[in-house]
Image (cartoon, rainbow, N blue to C red; front, side, top):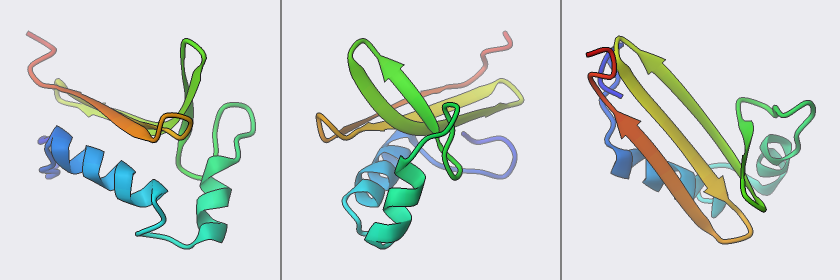
Length: 88
């Protein structure tokens, strides 16, 4: 992140996903809604498959900056990939 007036570090995004899925940011009913997928998408999130694990995440890119974060409920961990200058 960084372009598009967004300033978040990988740590910030990781903290967001961790707190979100601990139920610290939204109630349980809303958490259920974003955790149910239809055609690989839910309300604002995407299903991310890694080997036998299913993650719930979202990502984006702008001006050579890329970021993707995902929470893996079965392992209770979140992973964030962030990069810059990917156009060079």
